Image (tube, rainbow, N blue to C red):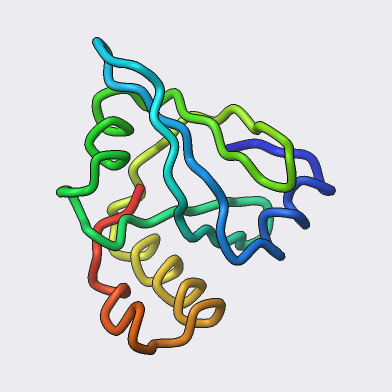
Length: 112
């Protein structure tokens, strides 16, 4: 997602944000997720993998919105599944959210 510098700072500093998704034939849905910023790139990952509602909706309709600090940032989800991207994003998530009781193995979970 392409965002302005001040919004990148908000996203990088946020422990959690809301993602708003919508199935092609359903109402909008918001849920709390974790997010990381690496340079000008922003990444999210599903802790529950493909079973998460927001993840399934994002795959079906990649037009999403990220809500942070009272701002709504429209975005288009783009899967990043190549090994270099997976390693890069895993490192970012591990740095921001060290392993613990709430996220012991998130580095192996799918993301978009």
